[in-house]
Image (cartoon, one colour):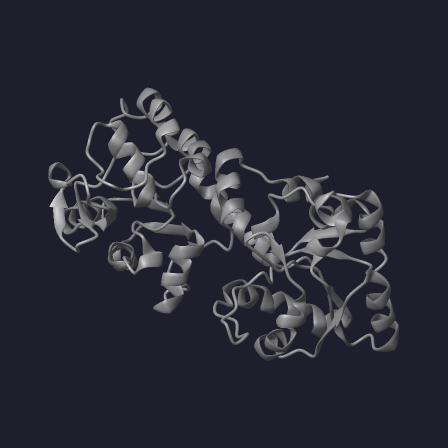
Length: 356
């Protein structure tokens, strides 16, 4: 099974967010019960540093309830399999093997010796053309897991959404969102731009953003493609670093925009309550600095609305989980980059591999 156990750890080695593990657990329990032997394939990488699963194995045993053994090589994984077929074997961080990110045919052949069937239950990494995602499925009978299938099925609905349809796009970088915006600029009834992303749009529209970071290279593209569209809106008031709420005309040169203001939230509440479907990716404030009120308040609004709400993005999901709200929405995606690529293109390399 290809899974995503790339979870954040606290300084004392505890898992700080087990969302993706818990979403994988139903299939893992079912396969162990019915088939016996399972080999798990995953990665553990933070800020481009590939770490050993050594640091996580104790926590994985606690969270999953299985006696998971860590195999550092494919040969060792095979040895564990022969010694005790009832083990759940976790192969060492896939990205520590050169063949994984190189999409090596030979590495895929090695992985294929570990099992009779391949299941991809890792939608969140299926936008990456790596050996365990796109080449291994051609070596043995291969299937999408139920979580993977749920992701694809629910996300596909936004291409023919219930109307009216609203897109809420937050987060930071324009370049990670532009393809999604292009996909929905003509399809969405309303697109709200928030988060640090809104700073660049506001600057492109001639508003002062003070000392807030903007992507100056994106401004010409924004002015050309989006500012003439009447279905794109931005915050009408913001919270700055002094915790003062100001209108767009009241942002001083030394102000740093950190969150949306109450008037913006009131506008969003009015719009959301009229929607049939809402798609949201990325927080509306600088949550790393504690400015999560706008995001939390909008989540509360969405909880009470009648629309089908689909949410993705790590920071937004972390806030959801902090309030135990992750099971209260129509769909909460495990994918970050994978969700964005799927929304932009309608497919992923991992989907194409399974279809073939």
